[in-house]
Image 1 (cartoon, rainbow over the protein chains, first blue to last red):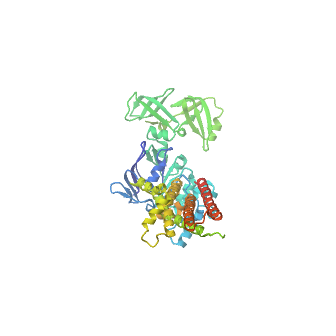
Image 2: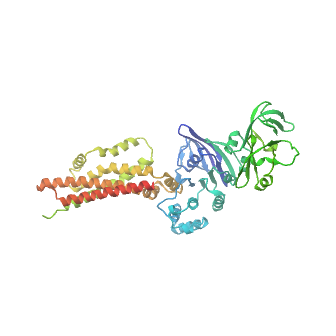
Image 3: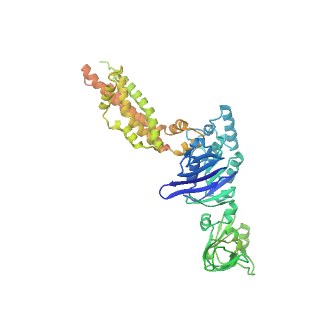
Length: 340
Length: 195
């Protein structure tokens, strides 16, 4: 079992208080700047001591406040790739890797270094100094160096890793990976996602579940859900599992909201990808007629901003087909609405 | 009259040995003060810096008194010891600042790769901070050289009655000290650029 349960106060205003399991595969920690991602990773690596709690790695105790166990970083077998440059500037790429492989005999060390150099396309740059490498090569070298040491847990404090490099890392090691990132695309490639905000875990689960169904207003805000409105519950129907929600400019049918009463003010969130555009003159239920404010071209889709602050993401093809429309109707599928 | 160069060789020998002797414990203490937090750290820091406030004459006299009954009394070894004591704060302060300003990421990366503290110090911290450390050593060398040379020349004049001091000898000592200071400044400047 690999488990982290720690409390660490950092200065008078910030404290990290987390309790989670690290499963096999990749666990992504998503949070904005200052959420405590780096503090968490550094604490697991042993660079700082928590105030209380326990850290287990494959059932071995790395830290236990009660029994005063604090394993030094070099005995933890936690590979750490930091956001800041950490390649030793006075060593070449090969020497950097050889430093990590120092516990093996010379021939074995050479073999391991050559193997990893080849795996991460660094063979041509083996004799180069770190300052001569471009940013992606530096990152690959940092990762390769961490993997040469055969860590039991790989800590990646890096947003620029990218999905392809993450896939490469997963092919190269069976060790669980804890990845701190502010990139949602990278989170989708993970097996588990933790949302971290102000040192606390807001939500955890499979990435798609967390991204599609934020469990709280804070989680929705953290994930940047663009459609976030306040509404009043006008009706509740537990039999049909539905509710009537009155917004400032429109009324919608939503899911049943347990624990709330008629007249309560609630927050409603809907992902831009889960809303649909309606065409034709037939009026479907749960649709709102709106005016297009602006269209923003994105890599995978086009984000349309409508009046009343409604955002819808559509494919480039769909947008091209509707571009000339004079009237826009947005459908809110009840299952797409999250009520807090 | 031919110039007697022996005071120069003696001063260089003393300066070199004193710098080397103060370098080893100075580096170790600087590393501990820069990287460790423990009770009494400030006191140790104050004690290590205290010789800086002592006049070299007092340090030399104290060393003579300490070694009065040994075979080393009134030999160049006393000068070397006094020099090492007087430049010890320079080494500690210069090296500590070097360790503190260097990127801690390198050391933490080395630790995460399984390197012990000794390995981190020897292979990472020291090479990364070598320029400011050599800069401090260079200044220390210049200081011991000029201080000891002054003592030797005065003693030489008092015992032989030859005054003023040979201009060539004094000029060479001043040039060597100036070169050491210049090298120190260059190293410090380069160290700043790298950090």
